[in-house]
Length: 316
Image (cartoon, rainbow, N blue to C red; front, side, top):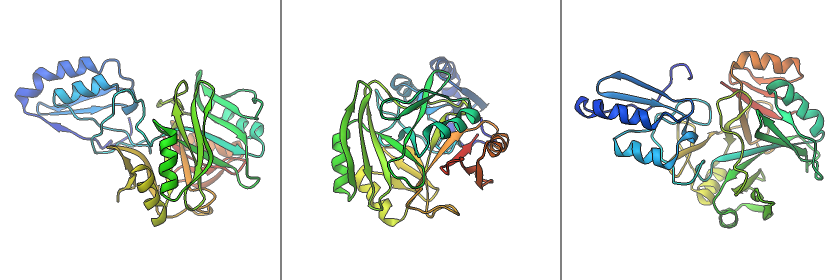
C-alpha cells in the first residue's frame, strides 16, 4: 500500500454498517491485495486492486452501500469512485499491452531481464519477442519500423477494433494498419493521432494483455503528453476527458494520466507516451538500472532512459 493513500471513504450510519461489514468482507476474500480498514463505526474504507473485481462483487458492493477506492495508473490512490461493466477485466480505452520497437531487440531485452527478472522468449518469424514474469506475459520487443529513436507502443483495450478505428478516422486520426486478427489472441490495429504519435488498438479474444499485478516488473499505466489538439482528438475518438488533476477519464474510470508539455530532453512527437513499470523500491531499482546502462531523466519522478534510449517511469 502506498504511503498516505487517498481513497474514498463511505460514511454510513453505525446501525447500517455493523451488519454489513461481515457480508462485504466475505465477498472480498478472493480479491488480490485486499485491505479492509474500519477506522470508525460509521466509516468503511476499502482498498484493493480494481482489476481484481468481477461484476458480481461490484454489484454486491453497490447493493450494500459500498464504494470503491481505485488505484490510478500512476500507482497512487485516486479519490473518486468507479464502475466496471460486466465481463470486462479492463475498461474500454485503458492500456492493456505494451511493446518496445528498437534497433536491437535482443540487446535491449537483456536490460529488462536484468532489471526486472523478465524472461524474454526467442524471436518469432517477424522478430517479435514476448516477455514474461512468473509465467505471465508482461510486454514484448520487436524491430523498430522507424530507424530513429526507440519507442514504446501502448495498446488500448477495445470491444470492437473496427468501430474504434472508424472513430479515430472521424476524429482526425490515421489508421496505419487496419484491424486484423492475430491468430486466436485478438484483433490488432495501429493508428496515429493528428500530431503523428503512434498507438495501437487491441480487441482481446484469447490474450487479454499485460499481467495486472503489484509485483515489480509489471506494467503500471501510462502518461500522455498532450496539447489542445490532442485533447480534442481523444475526446472525439474515445470519449476521453482530461481533468485538472492530471487524470484521463473514460466511462467512469481513470485510464491514464497526462501532462501539458514534454519532459526535458524529450520531443513531444518522439515520446508522447511514457509507460510506467512497477519497481518496488524505486530508488534501489533506479540505482540498479544505472549500473545496467540507463540514464536518469527525472530522478524525482523515477523517469529514465534504457540503454537503447527509450523512456520509462518507475513507480512503487
